[in-house]
Length: 105
Image: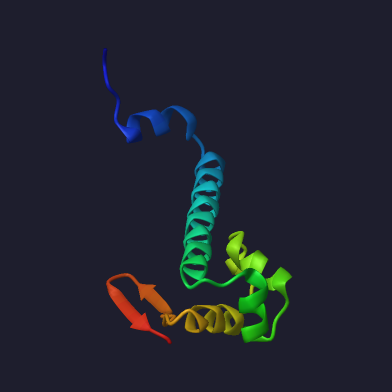
């Protein structure tokens, strides 16, 4: 049985710039869902329900749910920061410009 690298398999399906853009979008969406799932796990590890956390943040349970479904790009940065801080974390925002990394907050 011949094994193929991930790159070889990907090349079979990603042939045009449009394919590449679609693949990148799917990849980003999957990563957002993974990160969001981990946020939900951390909340649960702290013994909090979505409603408990929403009350602490003065937002709706629906807003917490959106964050935990991976809709981070559509959530207010201040809400995400509050979410992370309510669980004892610290949100760090980094802008990358080639080799330079600039911590924004």
